[in-house]
Length: 203
Image (cartoon, rainbow, N blue to C red):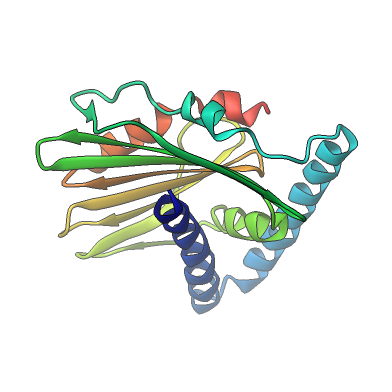
């Protein structure tokens, strides 16, 4: 399970660093800073609201597992879902993941309830709204609209490798990713939308 956690955090932090650098290169630093500030403010406000309600601990991993897609069209679950909850001073997070396979095609869906660095969360998801994108023969990177209120998402498509990753930040609290190998990007989008994102957005 620590491997799944590392994978989600690596995607998240890598996206933050990559986006910051590219936004500067594209001379969109002002917009990036504005989105950063707004993201931090929004995350902080929501955290304070949760603290006021006594809600400072992440959901149990078993509850997150229930939010994983029960099925993805054409794909079967590979084994049982994985999960873990960790609580310590100043940090609380839970993770859940499930692998789905169809021949040599594979999709992994991860959900993380992240109650640690809300500043980092706000900074990364704020970058989703800068309008920055890259498209060439090798890859496509950019924000993607999943059509769900309160959900900010980003896609990273390796065209020649036929690998796609879509990451969504939900309610300044949850990180959801769908990683596909030998899978069309539309199928990966369907996999992440199969998670009950609207329910998470309302928590």
